Image (cartoon, rainbow, N blue to C red):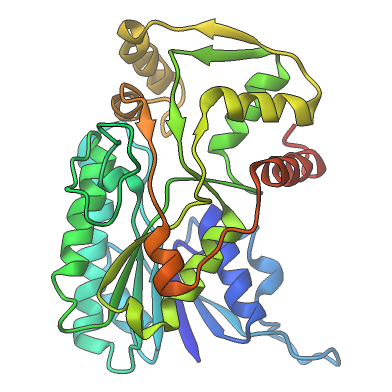
Length: 333
């Protein structure tokens, strides 16, 4: 069966491509000329005859979510489409809406026109589309969304586009919290800081997390379950962690003590602006600071467990160790 993956060269997308290819799907990866193929190039179908057994079919398809014509061609013949492409960090808020909203609208329109064989369209959203918990109780699929960042608002707007066509095409929306694992660059920053013995600290925070392999399993469960059509699901490891829990586990794995460097919330926007000037597209930016002003980012994945049969299998201890091992092997630490 032919599947299309947008965002195939990214952290989560490359893991999804591997999983789909491993299950025998023929995977079409939407890529731009500037895409870094390092995580999927070993999976690409050989262009020359070989005496080796045939590998699962993984092909590149040149296109862009902002190029409607390329999307019309990309979705043709595909039975499953996974839309993971999107912008998670930007200096200007408008960039989130241009990429996350318009890009989603374009692929939905392409499917409406050319997706005659479509069995499921899976859209990867985010906990940020709903926003933080306001009372310390994990948010659920029935929680009224109240995104606090431009990124979150753009993902919610994209969700509304997808959900708005659920009577016309089979859709499923997945909302993960913070995702970590091999190839992730956001958690990598936290690992590096703790290795250096410091941890910026602006008060106690609570998080839901999901290891990338668990998220991929949740996505795969959602693609074929009839009960998932037209539904939204949170996918997490079902635990709640404080920033101290996460930092202490990383420090234990790295065998490094660390000192908490207190950062007053009042100076965080200035800190973010300075970071933007020196590193455009970095995780420390003004939009991310809007999220960090809220201390409780937790969600409940019970519905996914009941309806999809999803179950987290990776503990924080295991996930942090495997992530650290990968960073070391690849000389990121």
